[in-house]
Image 1 (cartoon, rainbow, N blue to C red):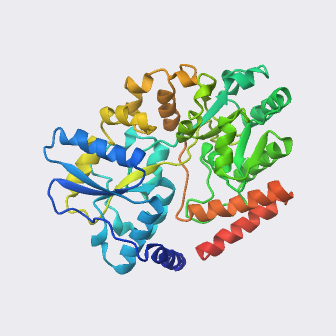
Image 2 (tube, rainbow, N blue to C red):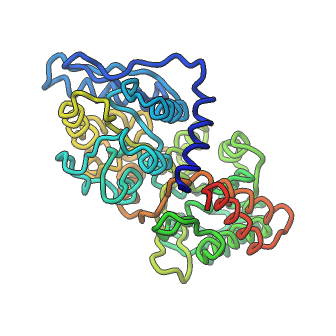
Image 3 (tube, rainbow, N blue to C red):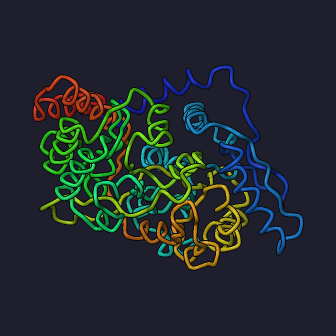
Length: 428
């Protein structure tokens, strides 16, 4: 009943979002054509079209018909189709944000095709990545882009404090925090910047030890979550020390990276495209892993932030073709990943990291083979429980974090309030 209550709320919101929208192409009737819903012409759409081009080399006449739809609109249209009791409006294949996958697979399992025994070798992908589109042991998605966390460091700035990138590799948060103080003292610059109200840093810290805002049974795990409390306390202490500066919005965050007003950042590897926008900083950046939490079982120096996976809808009448297409490309083609790396799309498919393209030195990062390194990071990232209410929990923690850092509110009280907010949303 609790899930039904929450689902009803979500349905209502999705109906509002989709009112007046023009419905895109649904599943194709042509035996050699698959319809696809996705977003971003220069990233996802480019990738699916390139995959189709590669697949067509051995499958004459094959093509995809791609409709550009934003990720939240895809989610709204799925909800609307379910609410209307008519899944015939769905395409053959659609892309879904990883952090939304559990929610939709939980509420609407009939929308997805079970890929568990499809012949796709999920063991060749990062375990953490596969977990996003897996529910109760059933695989519903084919992993796509890599959100492995990188710690991007300005080598010229940390050198002023007597450090090299090796000094920030495989270290703990306590060590990191002390070195950040030295960098601030010697350069006048913070080690990190973060968007105020966004708990991205906290979420990355949590996943680095396989921890979550949810228990395995799907219930909220905020108020009594000792790992979360440790993460929040570290973040708040760095803000108090001046080694982490909160900015008002995303544009200011990116500006801090490009204007040399921060010594480093860690985020999903997709942040590299924004870093490289400052061409005058070529050769001044290096990539390593993030700090790990002290005295926490299972703590690692690896995490994930962002990413998406491909799903085959239950409306697809050519399931064998759709499976074979995804298996031969996103789960089986180094040629594909060698090409789309130019668009910043990095694989979580481990064999891609062994190709020549992934082992080419990148001058911007001091000649390091960063792409192979990032794929390696992805394979070492712990999986965690995202839950159907991931974004609700994340938002509640974001409010708590703002109150703690901006008004000095008590950590335990704020996390308790966040727990209660989440439970209300879940109907607990």
